[in-house]
Image (cartoon, rainbow, N blue to C red; front, side, top):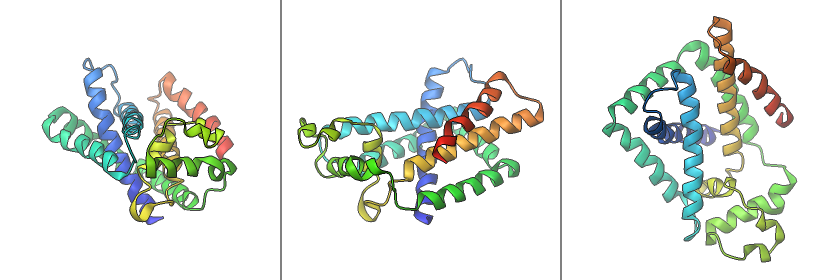
Length: 221
């Protein structure tokens, strides 16, 4: 559980900074005017960018932790060269550390980490998810792999994201990392929307988040 929490902190910071660079590049007119929204969009863009880049790396050989660590390290190092990104990252950190936000998120994170530490019991995970991740980790993406088993033809960016973490002592122990991480991110955004509604600062988007996120995560509880 402790290793899971450490991974989430590293992945959260790394993917957020990666996405924040993209937000600053594309949103030069600052149309996204609320810090919390910019943070969750940055996190989402960072996760998607990392997934796409890892999907490219796996085409050329086995996928270990090195490419993912390099991508996140470059994103973090780039903050030093971009003062605007650095200032926004510090402002986001102050927002996240506010007690009325940090305490509920911490409790949710601990609960999700406890659940995500259990062995994955989903039938399909044992049938082809884990085997596909292991294949990527040891051989990369091999043309014609679906001829070995037709289930291997159902590829997903979820697999390289898991494969790059399945290295060293973490091998075969990270099945719940990304699902738990994204669940915590969704709950954090839901809490932010609820706080805005309680403060009378809500927009239509906050009401949308307050309704849609509970409906979206309920089937997985």
